[in-house]
Length: 268
Image 1 (cartoon, rainbow, N blue to C red):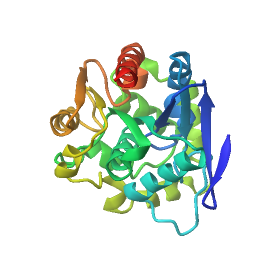
Image 2 (tube, rainbow, N blue to C red):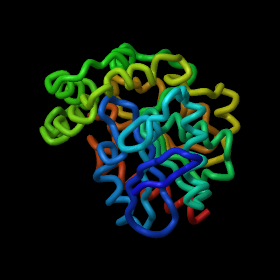
Image 3 (cartoon, rainbow, N blue to C red):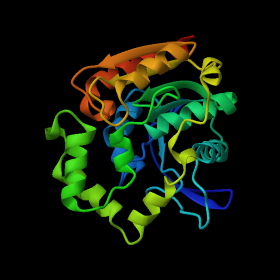
């Protein structure tokens, strides 16, 4: 599905009915809402919620506005406009990696739009960026490099990365001009960092569920621990045998934790 928001087109996946749960994807090469949330969209709909997963500007099938400068703050503004255009809010936000960074930014700056936060593999302002994340920003697309990245960097168990997923993300990352576009998006510090201070995180009112893979190479577990110590109302879950994709590599655990958390927030 697609919607025009302030003159740009945002593509999104949707399933189910009920209270909206908005799924915000990460920033790896070839990523999209569908690639990041394929199973989760159906799972959330089966929980009795309306699952909505947009492609951020610059990703997937959403627009790539000419001359647009990508920053975490501007992505958060775009998501806020998207929610307003669909007449949504407050919503449950579920963010993986960069998506969690955007979710936190939105919760701090537009709290009226955010009912709760679920965060997986998200950077904390007090923890240095990893070498693995830095290397991703210079990704040069080939099938083999995509396969190696997804299997050796993002997960602990390489068997969960199917050939179909590798092929789909390789094709997305190798479209004409896409590699240059990807590197340009993350060429400034503002595109890579959480634009909030520790004090601002301490002021976020929305209840949060923080899940972090113990073996996460992209955003090491120290980030999840830090967020758990900063957010005022938080449940933290450390997930063993898990890398950067909690929702994929430990999907049953993730979905059970999410269902319990959302039910508790909605009952309060």
